[in-house]
Image (cartoon, rainbow, N blue to C red; front, side, top):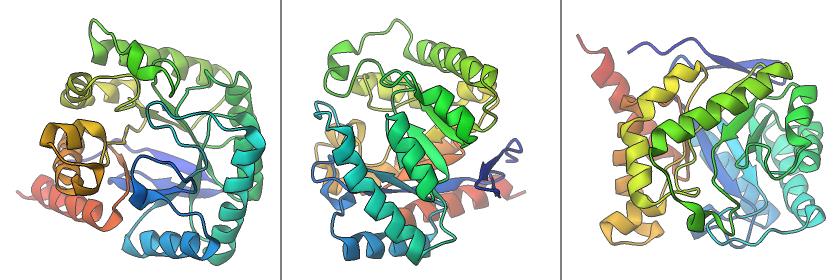
Length: 281
C-alpha cells in the first residue's frame, strides 16, 4: 500500500510520511491517565526519551498538562516550568530527536519551539487560545489539528453527535481552511479519539478513519491504552497493550500515517507486520 507523499518540515529536516511513523508519548506530569507514561525527574526523562528513540520513535511528544477527562487546567507558568527543562535536557542529550510540544497555549508552544521543539500538538484546535493559529503560522511549525468537543474538564458531558465521523470531518476541514488561509503548510489531522466521544463514537470513528484521507493531510491516530480499549476489555490502562496493538493495526488499515503511542517497540512491530501484509504479492 503506497501512502500519499507527505512530509513535515521539522526545523529544516524533512520527516517523510511514505510509511507509518511513531510519536512516543512523554508526559512530564503527575496525573496523566496512564502512570507508565509519566516522568518528572530529569534522569528519568532522559532515560525514557532515549529508550523510545532506541525502540524506533520518530517523534517525541512532550506534554506538561494532563488532558484526561476531568483533568484540571494548570497555570501557564507551571506548564512552562514542567516542559522547558525536560525539553532542554532532551535536546542536549539527543540533538537529532524530533520533538513535539503537546499544549493548548500559544506562549508555551512558542517557548518550546524556541527551545528546540519542532512540532505543535494542540488538542484544542486553537479553541482554548485564540493566538494559537497565528503563532503556529508565524513559527512555520507543523501543527497537529485535533477535534475535541468542549474542554477536558467537561468534554465527556458534550459527547452528542448525529454522525460522529461526518461531524468531526467537517470540523477538521473548516479548521484546516483557516490554517491554510494563514499560510500554514504542514498540518496533521487527528480525529481526537476519547475527546468528547463515547466508546461507541470512538469505534465509529476508527471504522471510518479512511474518510479523513480526503482532507489531503496526514492522519494521526492516538488510541494508545485509551478507555475505548480498556473498558471494552474490562481491564485497566496498564493491561491495555494487547488491545492497543490490535487497534493500531486497524488504524493503519484505515490509512493512519502516524501513531501516537505509549509503547514504541510494540507499535514498531505492528507497523512491520502491516508493511509485510500490504507489500506481499
